[in-house]
Image (tube, rainbow, N blue to C red; front, side, top):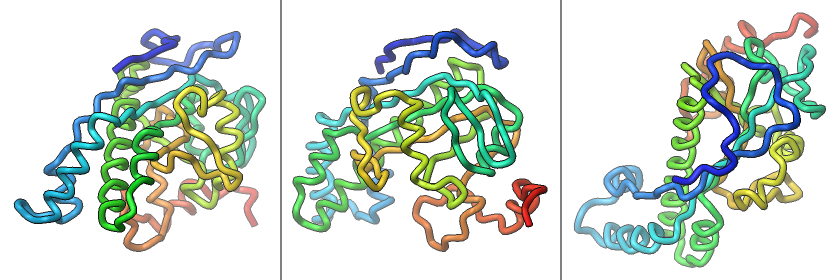
Length: 252
């Protein structure tokens, strides 16, 4: 793993905001060693089957070309109101985000990706099953990059506990907020190869962006999402959480 533009020492508490604006930190050369047994289980593939042969062939193709990457910045909240925050002159509209960031001034805008290489490789597959397997392999590379970034932030900034929020994960913070987030990050396309489409989707599709932040109360957007049978669910839906924690005193 290579980390470029390192810009901070271990910090246990929020310092005075840096001036000038901090540079993006880019984490690249992330090792991708596919978890074959985990993928077999996820895909319900049995040993010594035709599907196992297909998966092994795809892993042999993907591992050498995978280049997962991550980037982040150290940023500071300048102002807040009931349902928004201002970071370096850029406004982000979300009541849930605003409440989750109540106890901190320092945040870490980030973007992680499985990489253009796996994205382009997946798009060369025509067979539906093969393409599905390739998509899952790419998703596993994204998880690797996400774990590396999380570990890096916790160690580098002495974060005892952290959570994340991503634009589009909740109606309260819609996907249109990708645009100001990318403006805050700088140029994710040049840094790690992530571009935004006009509809605010990311290319490569196996990419995630958002804010990391220190927290005493763990948070997952899934806690506020009632969607049934979501394959990406990481926490149970809590139907009363919004009323308990996020309902504004100004709400009708």
